[in-house]
Amino acid sequence: MRWNNSAADEHRDRVGQGPRQRRPGRDDAGLGRVRQAGGAEEAALQGGANATHRGDPAFDTADFADTTTGNLRADDVLPDRGLPIARSFVFWPLRADPLFPLAGLFDPALRPDGNGLPSSDHRLVAVDAGVPRGGRPGGGDG
Image 1 (cartoon, rainbow, N blue to C red):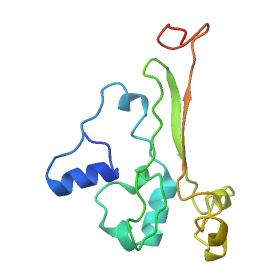
Image 2: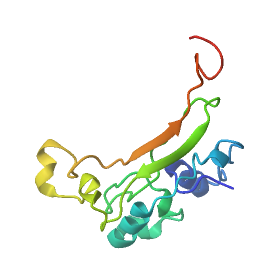
Image 3: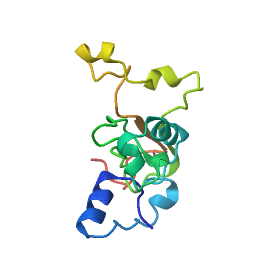
């Protein structure tokens, strides 16, 4: 299996290097395979470069211009491998969600002081991880 829709994977496919392989244990904990409906909805509504992507847009983490790269999986969280993972998620709500304005749509009026979006063209990627009592995941202290 491969990590879907990362720019690096798409580049490897184009140059014939093949897909990056899953890391056992990490993807099984939900890392690298976080699906969200907002990215898939936006890719379908925006079209443009998104229509030519081979990866699943439910794994996208960034809302880039549809006239250039389109939306991509561009962001990751890499917790220590010793941490137990409770869940992971990408904050990219559907347009009907009351929280959608936090991610929002491109607005040229927002461009002078930012990227044209209410927050960022990158969506929040997060992991809820447990930290063992008394120290670091590997047992060391620093």
